[in-house]
Image 1 (cartoon, rainbow, N blue to C red):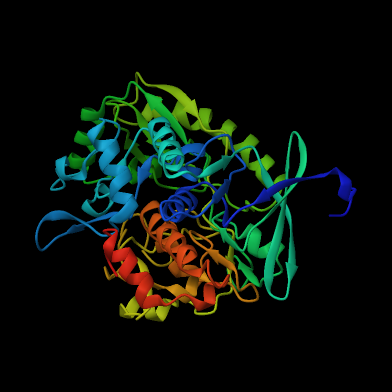
Image 2 (cartoon, rainbow, N blue to C red):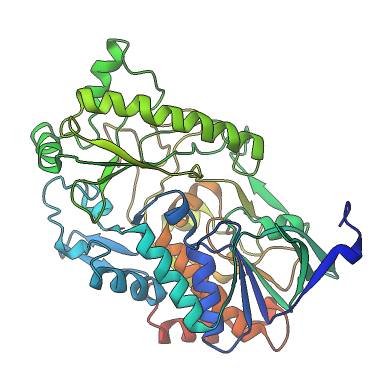
Length: 461
């Protein structure tokens, strides 16, 4: 801890499990462990739980359900805590039930059936629901806190150091979970990580999300269906030809929230943003907010249904799709994903798309085609996530869950959304319960781990 005298570091106490990151994966990890009696601390840098969903505004919870074209209906593909959380939100009127969406034509909840399988929710209600889950389970919450360093001895994390407005605090535990999305704990512990595209380090574009109210949803959807144009590509092409479209992204994405007439606009694509660099993120935030209002002027003038709309909310944190991934003990490869390989130690899975836009061509996804052929290369197969993909090298008592799992870059795009992140988090929490006696995640019997998950209603194993 250079720069701080040791006497200035407060002792925060000891826990059975310390979870860094209070997003989808972190909450599910902490709740699962605490429900089994572990004394669990959940550390979050923001002032609320929910991660990208709540802080960045990504209110559509993707990857927990899947549209089965053969049976012409939505099916649950994650289960467990994902279903517990989303079913509760739906019952409260704080989320849209995918079973109520007409997927046989373009719709305001994601156009294609595979996208309409997402669950749009009220992000503020989601925050409170996640907080209540943690408190009811006995999780100790500590927000406004950043992990700054770790102490490592013989391939074990022994202590973490944090900073908040009150100064520096150290916490100890036999087990740690990295649910930061950025592999922060693993990185600080010296575990090998990867970041970006192999050939140039390029990272997936980031997005400043904003909400607009007063949208004439019927007019918007009617145009999409009449022109068979869910992303308004021909309008944008015309504006571009006239010199009235100043962006390098070429598609429009807006999805209705549970409140009629309120749309989440997930259109802006910001290239060259590094989510692990404060200078880069500061610049992205400044530029993103400026882009919001310029884009909105175009929407009001040219996009059907937006003439009388107004910007109601611009989210403070830029949404980041990609940063670090751990180098795991068992990598999840693109080859295995395309083959639909089964793992005996499968602890979670995803049926979501290979959704990872190109670092330099923000409207093009190498794994999915382009705006005019949006699913050109996608094969819908279940991608299984093995337990070994959650275990970083060189740290026996550290597990990860969420976007920073040990997957090849292209596969990470299918694993980074809420459904599989919650599934991985629940797996990590159960693994912690099994590892507590030995203090090592390497000793966890995966058959027993899978039995626990199945007993908790998890699907896709």
